[in-house]
Length: 383
Image 1: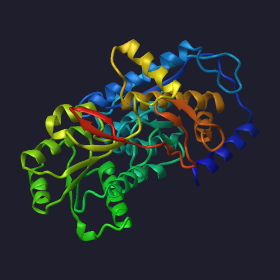
Image 2: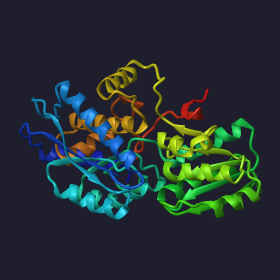
Image 3: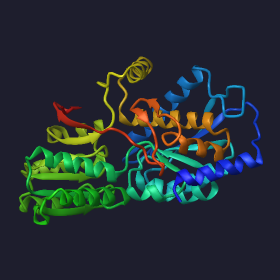
């Protein structure tokens, strides 16, 4: 049963029972993100984006839940450190479920953590809007599982087609982190290449590594020996930067390709000159001229003194989606989830930092994609 049908039935049921209007107490949110460990930079950016969105919504008057007449303020009840560890993700999911003040979870950032917590959240009826859970399997995690960016199925196919459309590379190799995120993205990318007519013999290697590995010499030596002229990294920025650097140290000249997983300033910083020329897909650009996005970015820079990035933007839009869901559905967990499921299928998209936010019938985000290239240590739009 898709989310659309599931929540239509819930909505009918709630109407039959009637809705209880609540007092004007704060609308509580919980943030689950890696605040320590190798992905901590993402977590800290997510917290900034989440708090910034809450602050702006409250400054504009707050949120008026469905069936209520008074505006209520959003409140970040708890920021929980998942350490990018699925065991922590499951524990945090239970922690948030048990805290009745939390109406929805923002995050997590990685697929592995999101998939670990999803069974608990779906069993007990607490919606999560994941910041970066792109694994295709997350679609089937349950009716309370949403995400604010497209799936790896969409992204992997997109960059495979983009790469083939360039007509520059004939021998592909991939290197992927051996977790839910990396395996899923790698499989989609390889499958898409084959569907586009790339001969199987031209996909010369698919090498795995473990999360937090630092030495990729064995995998890269094999790829170099097979004379790949394009290397697709299905992983995160920390390991991706080391892979790029070690590849160049080995004398590899293969074009590096990636997705938003490596689209982070730390990738450029750690990889240094090795990052030059990297192509990767993403969704956020400060060059987007739509007024709402320009106003949001200007407000952010005025407050913090620096330009916002992708993760701040996604976290911001997660909060906007939850706020709109409360307006459309109501100020309890079930009605909020019903509201989320209606954004896209029944109600217009919500404009946010990344443009239009809308879900399909499965709770997956539908967005336009952008391509970036690293030039002089900075990611710029590739046009």
